[in-house]
Structures are given as structure tokens and as C-alpha cells.
Length: 474
Image 1 (tube, one colour):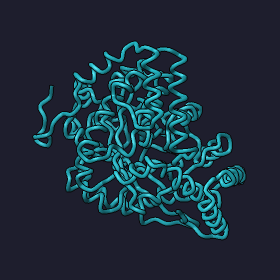
Image 2: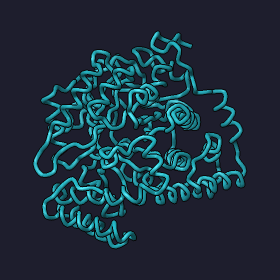
Image 3: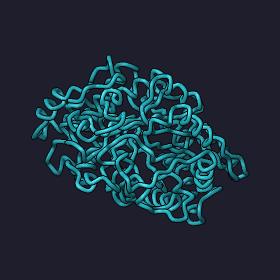
Image 4: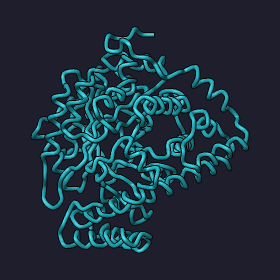
């Protein structure tokens, strides 16, 4: 095992591998009765223990797998309804000091063209995204030590500074960057970021240290405690994730859950979001073409469903790594946030020669435009696309958000606010076909709304939007 750096002195490893392996072994070949007991508990929407989650993942009965999917669908519908939050990643730099064997940004990759956007280039990218209708962005940074918290904070200011015609403005900036110290996290908190996102990639320490051979990311414990430092700095919402394909997927799911439970013990609330990307081919990363632990589509669907049952009020994020057809399946069993119209290298949105593997982080599976995705999910599948940011602007974050969510708050506020942001998109950005399909969906949703007082407020705000007002919420 590698010696920890001075950064991680005094930090403890709360990922108890021996316990996780015991939980997995205990869950092997679960009886049908045990699986049903776990599913019945899940329907109470109080979450599951890591062991109970392993029981679902280790089930091999096809009929009970279907029951797992149905339970996840029921929980998602009961909490989130048919609302689906959309965002786009904006890559700021692909310069990186780490040597991660699975990533195209690997510092050893000499075939990758390195780019870092300056303030003017960031604003140009944001203009393109705003003119498509985006309101929520995830800023993504390669982990290079020369780009510190002050620089990251300035890039966030650059994004927020851009406004375009119609309702063009970014209202929520989340970031995915290298773990910082507490002082650094305070700096990015002060410029108004939403969620701080950081993936541990793999929780299995031996595998982690084998795959991370250079750079600050070699320090397992420093990265593991990133969420703790962010929350200590005042960032209420954090997002974690694992990269599936590097190690045993059941172990990774339980690693995520144990990480979440440690945050709950230490700060009273777990992660705001969990992501679960699968390893995809990337330039200069041989392991990405031959994952050591490939995860089949069926098993991946079970992972998403099991997470929805285990952490019912946590946002589950799905990227465009997966293709359009499979993304629709995963939305059904638990995904609540998706990226749309994604491009995965700096300057990609304003690049006329888009789709260049020599600059992007990984291969995209869903290349549809934002409008095409909205037409599909709203027109064909009846989901309400949402760019709502009301909670963040009203201070309903962190533990406060989770308390409200568990009392039915998400359905009471988030669905009507989602409809209002969807109406804004339809008025200002949608194609004629998408606008017709979207307005028909909104009409059906309003007619079905069962709270007369809120229905009246919603109808009033929708009418005001048609008359030209923008950024209305409840």
C-alpha cells in the first residue's frame, strides 16, 4: 500500500473493506423471501442498508429482478413524479497532473491536445449553451495543480456574467474539480456554486492505487475526505460517484453507500446526488477499451434501481455515455437528472469541427441535441424537462432540502416549478414540433393537478410567461 501524503495525515479510512466483503458474502444467493422483504422495506421510502442493497444486486431470479425494477419505478414516481432535471457539462480545461490509467486526460497521454479556456472563451461557450436553452451547467476541470481555487472561482464568475437574448442566463453552476482544502472550498462557495461533485472512481484501495500512478489523486484518503472538507466550508450539496468497470460493481455500490452514511453521521445529511458512469473508450487509455470488471446493461440497470431504493431522496445522475435507448430504460427505474446535448472537451460547443477524439475525455453514446432529447422525453414518454433552481435560490439545500423532500415537498413544489421552466424553454427556444408536444404535456399536467390553490397559481404564472415574463417560480 502506498504511503499517504502529508495532505492526508490524521485522516481515517471509513471504507471498511472487510465489512463490505462480509456484507457481499452474506448476500450471495439470497432467498426469494429475503429479496421480497427487502423490497417491501424499500417501498416505505426510508432507504436500505448496504447489506440489503447487496441482497438486491445479488439476486439471480429474473422475476424478482423485474420486481426490483418495478419497486424502483414506484418509488421514483412517488417522490419525483414524471419530472426530469436537465443540465449540460461545460469543460473548462483538460490539462491534468494526474495519471489515471482509464482517462483520456491522463498526464502521460501525449496524443491529447491540451486546452484551457480563457474568460472570453468561457463566455463564448456559455452563450452557445444559453442560446440552446440551458439554465444549469456542470463545470468540469482537469485536475492540474496550477489551477487553484481562485482561478476556479473566477471561471464561475465568468459563467454567471453571461446573459443573452430572451431568457438566456445560467442560474445554477455545479462544479466537478480536484479536491481542495477547506479554504479553497470556501472560495468557490462564496461565488455561488451549487453542488460540488467529485468521484472517488473506485473505493477498492488496492485497485485505486494501481490505477492512479501519479499526481495528487494518488492520495486515496485526501480524495475520500473531499466531501467532508466541502461541507465544512459551507457547501450544503455534494455529489459523489464511482466509475463502473474498474472493480466489482457490488463493492462499488456498497462503497458509495458507506460513504453516504459517513456524511450523514458527520454532517447530518448524505450526498445531494450520486453518479454512476460506466467506463467508456478514451484516447490513450487502453484499460478503457477492456474494462477489468465489465458491467452488463442488465446489471447496470439493477445498480440504478437498487440505488433508487437504497437512497430514495438522492438525485441520481445519468450522463450521455449511454445511448438514447438505454437512457430511456434507466430513467424509468430511478434516474432523476440527465445531461443533454453534451460535449466533453474545452471549447466543444463553439467548435465547428466537433467530434474530435483527440481532445475529448471519453466517447459519447447519446449525441442528440437538447431539443431532440426534450422532444423525445416530453413528446414520446411524458416526462417534464426541468431546469428549476428555486430551491437553491430560496435556501432550501442540504439537510433542509432532505427534510422537506421526505414530507412530499418535491411533488408539491418541484413539479409546478419544473413546468414553469419547461414553459420558459418552449416559449424561447423550442422547435415548432417540440413546442406543440410540450404545450400539450403542460396542459395535461395542469388539468391533472389536484391542489386547487396551487393549480390557480400555476395557471396564472404560465399565462404571465406567455405574456412575456420570465424566471417565475413558486
